[in-house]
Image (tube, rainbow, N blue to C red; front, top):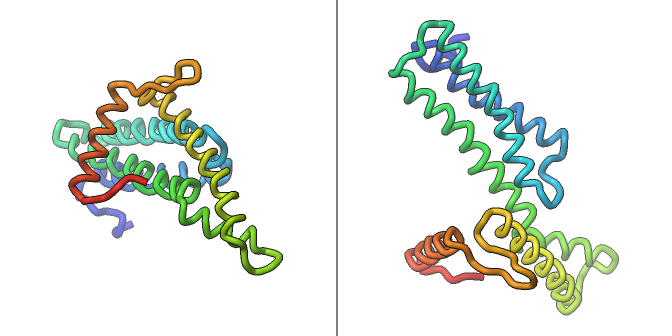
Length: 184
């Protein structure tokens, strides 16, 4: 299959196409098992992504060793394959799931459609009341996620920012200031 031979080295071709193949298998599994739903979907997706990565890495190393290509010069190809695999997950899949689940605009459009199903229009007050309930839910969910990720500590009825949270907040502030953006 000539068009699949991007590199002269067969091990590099297996690494490149293996990254795409294993990510596609991961994506099909995510869709079939509906892993992107539920409260802990990000943790489940990350865990499942790792379990699909392991056979990819083993196949890449194994094929490279069997063909006699497992040497230091293959390291950039292995790094590129890992980068491709994880980029597809974290840049595209996570972003699409985040957009679909937590985008204010996407949710507003869906709520206008749902709330106006009978009359074709929805009153602004009814829409805003409905949105406030959903935003409160999203905020609580995000607080819980930040505690799990170590960005905040949940102590009794209070939250405290952790050093990791302070670092990420500072990074976010720098990005907002650089692009002259404001927070929600």
